[in-house]
Length: 115
Image (cartoon, rainbow, N blue to C red):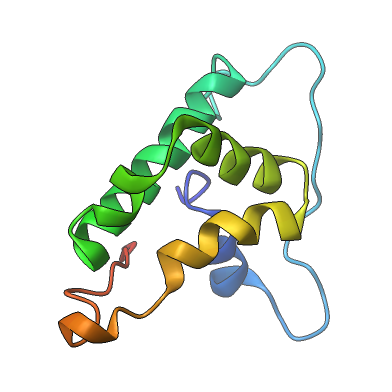
């Protein structure tokens, strides 16, 4: 079953050129616990997101960018993403995407492979 892959991976696997591959059903009660993982809170999603950011920064920049960020910067990154505020998000994300020329570039390029 592939329902727990990120939505971008699922789209690439199942989309045709003209039709979306699925219909979305939003459950407000009787959550399908047997079929889907249930996330207990928004803070768990935020923690997972920040963990992924820290992991990528460790590979790209030896954790220098995230370690230099303050708690308010982490919150701005998350809130910009969560609230679809591109400028707010990009103000912090830009630091993570900059190419460190003095070190000869990125150490590694982080990516995940789903099989």
